[in-house]
Length: 129
Image (cartoon, rainbow, N blue to C red):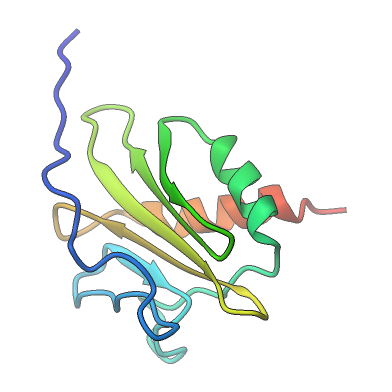
């Protein structure tokens, strides 16, 4: 089997600055809880959880590497199974909820992968009763 990896460089705009994660680009391969709620393509609800709950959920997912973890911020890289494409996923606890941003490094479309990932993490944190 070939070990093909399309990771390229880590974006320089990661991290929370003045309580905000980087905005999504115009391409449909990113979701953010800090996007305008009227932007149905990019907006996703924040997580109602602790950072510890978020970290446990992220650690439970395959092909994931936590790169940076602080008490109020977590950054992880997720790799696709087939070709090793990397998505950058950030979580920032703003004192009330956990803001999220999940974005593909490459390409224009993600076929809903970033949204599904965040909703999967949400389900791990608060499983249906």
